[in-house]
Length: 159
Ligand SMILES: [Zn+2]
Ligand SMILES: [Zn+2]
Ligand SMILES: [Zn+2]
Image (cartoon, rainbow, N blue to C red; front, side):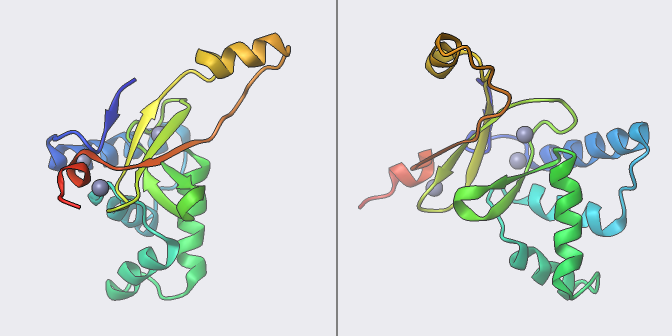
């Protein structure tokens, strides 16, 4: 399992490589990566934290990219549909994917203190759940795993 977000890393590279990956994926697949879609992804890439649609809309409004909720929702729909952004059901918020353009089953680790979110990957048919599913003759296509707890930074804080 690889995860990013809680580990220290070169965050500037994290933003540029995320945008570049989506840029080339859109170019290869004939998808329109409009200015608003691009900016929404960039806002999400800048923080390893889940943002609600209204928080994103606040950015867009300040920057003159749009002030109506559908502007943010449409951009998010596009980004989620193509796997560039994931929705965190638990928080009703969104985070940028850490490996856009490649099919994967994410597992989210959500810090209840600072709402930072790290993404890891796993194989849905492996592990205990996979074993249970196989025994039942069930083929898992999608799982949503959202684990809640404390990130390394917040564990270090005194109570
Ligand atoms: Zn980063
Ligand atoms: Zn992802
Ligand atoms: Zn935290």
